Each structure stands twice: as structure tokens, then as C-alpha cells.
Image 1 (tube, rainbow, N blue to C red):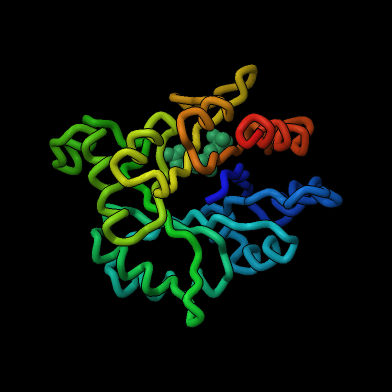
Image 2 (tube, rainbow, N blue to C red; image 1 turned 120 degrees about the horizontal axis):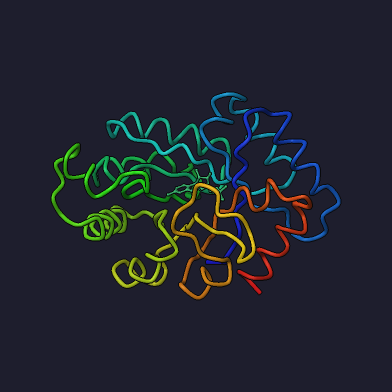
Length: 235
Ligand code: C5P
């Protein structure tokens, strides 16, 4: 499985995201892998996926599905027909929900997008997990257990911190993908991310894909920032 940099296109409108991607017109290398989140998808609709795909980008559709198995299965079939390359769901929806999702994603010809699980959101603290969710194990145990469930269900990997990538690979195997946000250049702004690593460090820690937003989207020269990420992460 190839390592890659995924650009988090956290824009509110079609116009903004396309203006950003216009910077990559005439780009001679493979076009960047793009992450589309809820805001853009719900605001601009499924056509935005077709339009960006039509420009030659691979797409990670970050909608984090979580519902009863049958509903997730049917929704995943719709996402698969959009020809996305990667999508995700919450591992907390149970192994049965993840298995149903995979069934829904699989196209008649047997191909399907990669399916990645969110374990516990990084916005959830140990305290909130205990008090709100009544989960008493440590965050690390919960993350690894959910990752293991995702593996059992047949998923391709998890979203996690680069700092957890090594342990996820130990528990779930070297071929189980780790998709890791929280990446910053050594000389860049941290912003609201707390535990950050550089692209080079994420590579050393074993991340398979890094998800990078503002260090590229807010850079004076986004193409140069993207190339720097690729150079540090892939070499
Ligand atoms: O701008 P920045 O590089 O912080 O963007 C990181 C992207 O990864 C955002 O789209 C954010 O929502 C997403 N993400 C994250 N932490 C997680 C899961 C997703 O930062 N645990």
C-alpha cells in the first residue's frame, strides 16, 4: 500500500475549494489526494465529489457514518457509486455495522473504496469517555480494541495519531492502514492541534497516510507546501 499525503480541503463552498485546487492546474506530478469533509459535502452536495474526481484527484470522503447496519450499508453503496477512493465510519457502531458497511461499499465488479474506522475522536478525553460514555478502560486500550474490531470486520485501517501508528500496526498488522492527522512543519504554526508531528517524524513512526490541512491550504504557496510535505513524508 503506497504512502501518501492527503490534503484536508476544509472549505465551506464549491467556489473556495475549486479556487484552491486551481493552484494545482498544470501540476505535472500525480494530483494531490483530497479529503472532503461534512461541511463541504453537505453544503455543495455529491456533485462536488464528481467535479473534484473529474479533475484527476483521488478522494477521501470523511463523513464518519454511524447508524444501524442496514442504513450504513445502503448509504455506503451510494458513496461507492460516487467513485471515492477512501471513506470512513465510527468503529463504535459495532463489528456488525462495519461488516454491513463493507458489503454496501463493494461494487458488482468486486472493487470498493478503502474503508477506515474512527476509534475514539481526539476531542474525547479520558474523563468524558468515563463520565459520558461509561467506558472505564484507558483511552489506549479502547483505541486498540476498536482498531482490532475494525480489523476483524475486514476494514482497511483506522484514523489515529502518528504517535499511535506503531502500536496499531503491532496489534492489527503491518498492512493495516494508519491515516494520521495532526501534522505540522517543524517551523510552522501548531494552531488548535495539540499533539503534532512533522511529516518526516510521521514517516518514521509508520503512518501510511498523513492528512494535512492548514499547513497546505493556508500557505502563501500551497503547491510548494504540498511538495515539501511529499518530500518529507515520501522522500
Ligand atoms: O488543518 P489541519 O492540518 O489541522 O487539518 C487536519 C484535518 O484532519 C482536519 O480536516 C480535521 O478535521 C481532521 N482530523 C483531525 N484529528 C482527528 C481526526 C480528523 O485533525 N483526530
